[in-house]
Length: 458
Picture 1 (tube, rainbow, N blue to C red):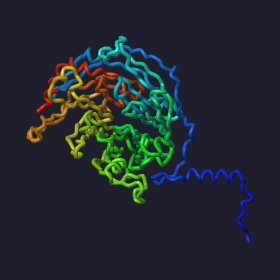
Picture 2: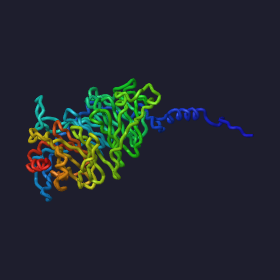
Picture 3: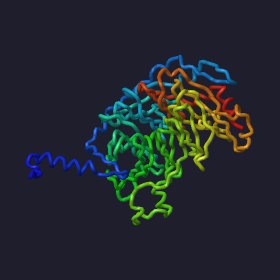
Picture 4: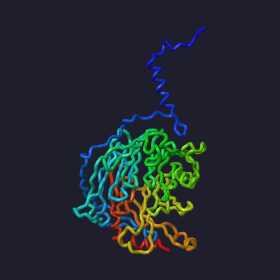
C-alpha cells in the first residue's frame, strides 16, 4: 500500500507556501482574499529642491467665444477672456486627478506618469494682500513619485494632509513637512476615489470593485494605523466607485458608481453619536455600514460629480450628455441639464456672487460648467425661484436650463474641471497632460453674460 510522503518536497518550498497562506488568505471586512503590498511601496517623496518655475506661455489669439442667443449662435472674439487663460505642461500623459486647496490658489494633480504635482499660481508683486489681477503664472513642484499610476487625490479640509491613491495603497502626505506620514495597504483592489469628511477625521476610499472603506485617520484607538481595525466597510455596490462626496453635516456620504447608481450612506460615527450603536455589543462589533439609501438608479454611465458651494445640490455628469441634479435635503430630484456634448465628462460650478458685477445683488444664481465629448467648456444657468409654483407654470422653453456661452477653441480634449470660488479661477485638465487656468472674473466684461444670468431669475 502506498503512503503519502513529503520527502520529495523541499522544505524551503513548504515554508514559502505556508507563509503565502498566512498572508494571502487574510480576509478583508468584505470577505475578499488578497496579498498585501510591501511597506516600502513605489510611492516616494520628492525633495523640495525639485521646485521649478514654469513661465506663462503665450496665449493664442484664436480663443473664441460662442454664445447662443434666442436660439441662434453668435461667434465673437473676446480678448478679455482669451488673455485670462493660460496653458501649462503638467504631466506626460493623462491627468487622472485634480483637487484644489480650499484657502490658497493652489491645485494638486496626479497622472498616469505616477507623479503628484503641486501647482501654485504666482503673483506679479510682493504685496502681502492678494488680488486676482496680480495672478501671473505658475510655480510647480513634484511632491511624490510612484512607479504605478496614481488614480485619485484628496486634500483634508484643515489643509494639513494630501491623500494619494495608487493600485491598492493610499498614502498621506504632510503638506507642512513634505513627508509621507501614513500608509494604508490593508485594502484589496484599486482605489479610484478619495474624499475627506468635513472634520478631517475620516478618509473615504472608493474601490474599483465597488467597495467603500472609511479610514479613521484621527479618530479612535487605531487612528491612522495600517490595520483593519482602523477601517470601516460599506459594501453592496455593483460597479466601480468614481467619486465620494461627504454630506455637509459630516454625518453621511454619497457614493457614486460607474453604472449609473448613487447611494447615500450613514456613517458608523453618526450612529455612535446618536446612541444607535454600541461598540461593546456583539451585534455592533463588525465595522460595517448598515444604513444606506439608493437615490439614483439610471441605465447609463456616470462620469463625475460635484457638490454646490453651499452644500445644497449634488450634480452628476453622465455618459448620455446630461447633468443630473438632486437637492441634498430630502434627495429631491431636479430638472437635468442636457449639455448636448455627446457625453458629459466633468461638472463643476460657482455662484454668480464670486464675480465683481454680481457681488451686491440680493439673489445668487448658480452657474454650472460642463465638459464633454464635444470639445470646449460650456456655462449654464438654471431658472430658479423661491416660489416653486411659478416655475411649474412657466412654458418649458423658459424654465429649461440656459446656455450662457461656450468656450470652444481650447485645442485639446478637456477631461476634468474644478473651480476655486475664493479666487475665481477655473482649472482645466486636458488628456494631453496640460493644465489650463481661466480667470472667471473676466466674465464681468461679457455684456451678454449678465443679461443671460438675469434671465435665469424668475
